[in-house]
Image 1 (spheres, rainbow, N blue to C red):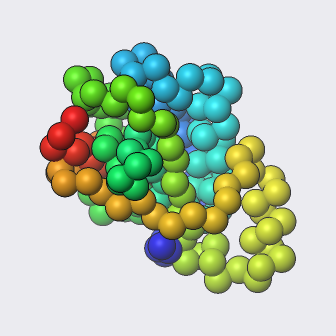
Image 2 (image 1 turned 90 degrees about the horizontal axis):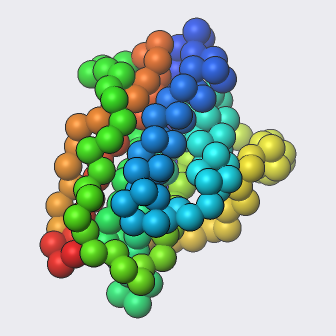
Length: 172
């Protein structure tokens, strides 16, 4: 999946890291409530990955949460979509569901790149990926279980950032 965005020239890596810090707060809430992601270094790596991608306009979406590997579906997912302008307001992190039963479900993350990234020559894509703190292997996007999504949080600076929605399955 790809998307396209044109960010403001005033949006810097520092701004992207600010947005990433809001995502880190959400991931730390997941960790506090559900015990995963258990490695704080991994949270830092996820945040730096988002910041580097967002700064260049290369982020499409990034998902974090819990999926049922037997059924091959998300049970609880936080999705962050790169967003420019419009109704982008910098809100406080939080609002993560706290009473879902994800016992035994592995923590998972999925990322899609923007059209800006996918239009780069393969050599440039590869070189940029080498700078990221996380190595991602190609994977198909995981479908959602039966449930619903709640939009509402946006994290941004200088007209660029992410909008977040939270998906929860009906059966958890």
